[in-house]
Image 1 (tube, helix red, strand yellow):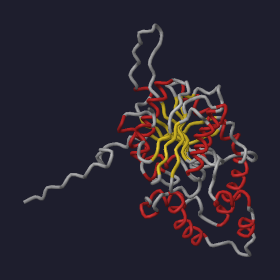
Image 2: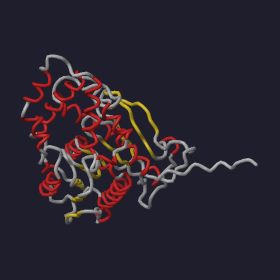
Image 3: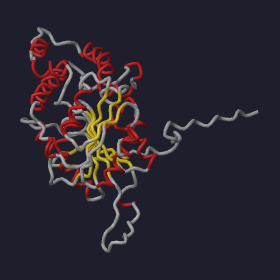
Length: 341
């Protein structure tokens, strides 16, 4: 008697393990920087030709989500969300920011200006295909806000998740304002062995990024700790972080933001407190606010389905309202589905 092989179960987004990965990977150039792009949705060459609407010469276009990651992260942080968006038929891309992932390194000098130029180039490319909603986590949230300040960019809406520079945690403030720990680390008589650096990173990373370190994905943690392979790399990243925090001190002109904005605050964030999201909501009167007390600094890792749903609902609302600011009340806890009104 021959045993019958049990079929492999589908994953949480309903994809069978034998099915092809919906996330396509490629390399492109934006603002002169070669980088890696993760993309879901129908390839442009295969997308059906849009039908004309009742208004002569006007053609409907599919909305495009552009996802930006945080400091010392990469586009891979959005893979779980991209899987969810692919299952829902939403077109989206995530890119490695310059200096991170597989992107070319940042040039010497101010970091935010280089990132601004890069993000603007991504937005302009995607805007040819459809209305762009820009969403970012941490540093990506900052880049999204700064892009929204530029009225010349074709942005339909912005989602800022745990953007620093408004009300940060003691840890971020320490990195920016107290260089003593960095100096002591850099002046050690002997470099810290690489295995010890990685061991410490494996313990620290889950506690910083996740709401509950016990639920941390081993693959994601390994990806982060790979950024700190040795003493020299760690010293370089810490020094870069100090420069970035200094640039964040005066990086916003929030009164210039006119497009729909969703501020997401996370109650278990160890780097950017929930008060930062609340302050952003206060400073941009037409914005909406979602407060999730059960999310950590990277909710795209804590709760991919919920984040994908939140982005999808907000995108639909932003497309409906165009670029006209609409006042809205605060949304708290698990009420993401009302974030677009």
